[in-house]
Length: 218
Image (cartoon, rainbow, N blue to C red; front, side, top):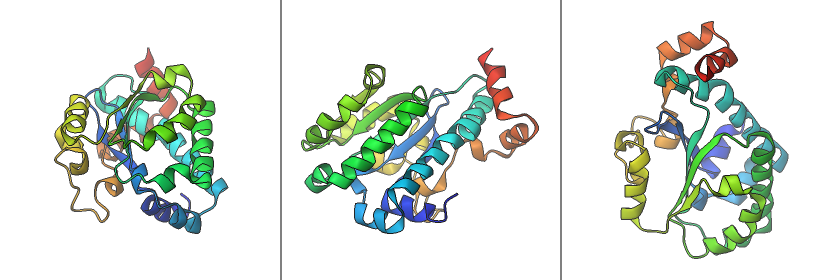
C-alpha cells in the first residue's frame, strides 16, 4: 500500500464494510466529508489514481473471490453507498475537486466498468444537482441505470439501505447498528468482511483467485 494510504482515508473517508444481502461487498464513501486541502497535502493527483487503481485490483483479486467462497456463488459486483452529508457549495464548485472526481470516474469506467452492482447516493442536498450536471455525462447509461439518489431524509435512507444490507452490516451513521467501536476510526477503518475470515483466506491461499472465480462462474 502507499505510505500515505491512512492519510488519504482520513481526508477522504471511505472503505469496505461487510456484505449486502446478496453477499456483495459493501463499499461506502463519505464524499460530503472530503477535506480536499488535507488530501492534497497528503498526496498528489497521480498517486491518488494509483491508490484507487490498487483498491480496484484488490477488489478483483481478494474481495470478490472471498465473497464468492463465503456465499458459495459467484460474486463479482459491489453494493456502493455514496454519503453526501456535509457536502458544501465549495466542494461542488472547486475545480480541483472536479478534476479529481472526473479522473476517478474515467479510471473506473475504462478499466472496471462491470464491477458496480448498485450505487445508492444518500443525503443528497439540493446543491448536488450542480455536481450531478457535470458527473452524469461522464457515465454510460448502463451505469446511471444502476444508481439511485435519495435526499437528506434519514427515514428514507435507512429504509432503502436496510432493503439491501442487514442492520448489523451497516454503520450507525447510515441507519444501521454497527459502530466498530473497537477500531480507531470506526466502521470505515475496520474493513470487516469475508476477506478477513481465516477459513476463506486459507482457501484463497491454496487456490488462485481466478480459478475460484471461474469455479463459481460455471
